[in-house]
Image (cartoon, rainbow, N blue to C red; front, side, top):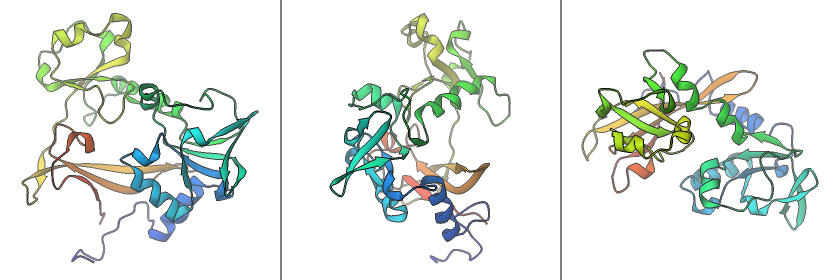
Length: 261
């Protein structure tokens, strides 16, 4: 296809397309009726990831809802489906905590509530495995990282450093080459919520009609009885960072399939 070698694969771990779909159905739906599983997102019709939601429904039958559609009855959650109240037993959660806080979007329940529902990605999981672990990792592939409350001054090579909030998403709040004035604006009582990190510079290695473009290779994992790689993804961009928000108005940027030999 498209002149590519026949031995290239778009999935990892020995999966082919059918095996990938079956595995993802087990991860997302489990033993439940698919009508009792939902993908939940803030104002999903306005999100950049709306195509993902459409494919999730097409491939696995999981419908997307806004949290405002959820009704709480004791410890159980319901929504209207086909004109009747339907129990929600499993939530594929796409609600991002900082967006929820920033927008003040109405929620019929608190994530800290004891409710009878299974989660595919509870928001608290992000706080268990997150950027907060990076200062304690020592490896050539891990950028040098310091908690802001643990340093008194900027590193000498501050032009190669970024200042970033611990709990932000999609590059929000990142400051490149921070100055002493940038640090001074952060109250001492909030400095434990920020990191200083060595900046990783992307090299433009992919030739496009609009010039060389940078690439970032990511691997999608799912957790079954183990951590299992299922698919590679290549993000391309020419902005200061990867991601749609940082490459607006540019051509030949965005996400592309990755193929493995």
